[in-house]
Amino acid sequence: MRKSSLNPQAIPESYPPCFRSNTQQTSEQDVDKLDDQENEEDRIPVIDLRHIDLEKLEDACTDWGIFRLINHGIPLTLLSELHEHAVRVFEMGFESKQTLFGSIPTSALSYFWGTPALTPAGVALYKDSNDQKDRGIVNYNWVEGLNVPLSQPTHLQLDQHPLFRDLRILLEEYGVHQARVAKAIFGAITQNLKLCEENERYLSPSTGQLRVYRYPRCFYDNPSKVWGMEVHTDSSVVTILNQYEVGGLQIHSEKDNAWIDVKPLPNTLLIHLGDMMQAISDDKYKSVKHRVKLHREMERISIGYFVFPEHDCVIRSSSYKPFTYSEFRAQVQQDVKTLGVKVGLSRFKPNQNF
Image (cartoon, rainbow, N blue to C red; front, side, top):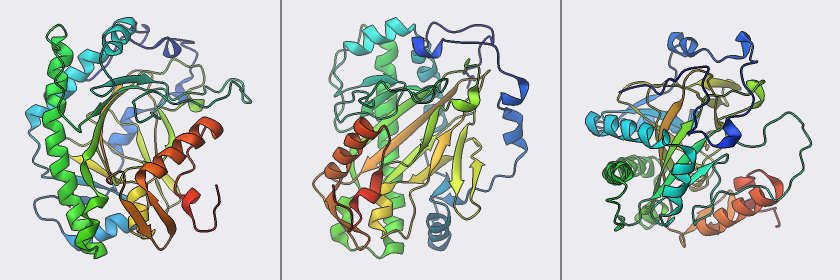
């Protein structure tokens, strides 16, 4: 598996134009050191999917909101091929990507950059404002990606685009594995939470979607003001992340009140608990806050699988008003458009009116 490492003096034409600006004025202390992560102790809890220890799982969900999964059963060849194809697709010229992905219905795939916030149709979502109160601070996330809904296999004729056709086939195969893993993890969590069978609708594989991310090298003159992704929580029940060989992911430990680097370890997956899991658990489990740092010399590729409740399933919690995921999503998108940020679960507290 090849790392996406490029000539540090070249600004690839594959990057969206907003990522090609500015250049080589970063001082050494601002450059993220990849070797630092390699020397740090890995503190993320580990869960074995073959033999799930419910007590360890409970501790991981309560104390961390994230854990590392081993023995997940996904073939290494599939993971390697996915990475190779993703790198090749992102290395296409930006204008070529726009032309290709612009010709494909968003029901099969959408291409985005500068923000991870998308509408249900897969269109990038930005704040409705041109105000820039903080001059010199980039107002977008340094990321580009592909959003692939998995609700039904694509029937598009993609023979003229064999690279994307092959990537889509690999993603669909990968999605089957991700649904299997998500159901197994959720089944174990429901045992710990003592949820009844009628709550099975809280996790619906038909809502699953894959996001393939590339975090370009950062040429900004002050990279401490630029993030691959800013601090956020996922709206999902669970998110399954494969971050391959280049790190950058950080999670916030409430126990330590500190940011912790999450190292990429071969043949492991990361399971994030999302907002829906926090609500389902009556705030016993926390949706993990996380962000992504950038590198000057190496690109980062990661693939996330997000799965949600059935859209009309009412989530009942002692901590929140009853709501459906569709209502939650609509409120999040309204907040992003008007405020520029996701407010999230606090909107649904019993004493909140909106």
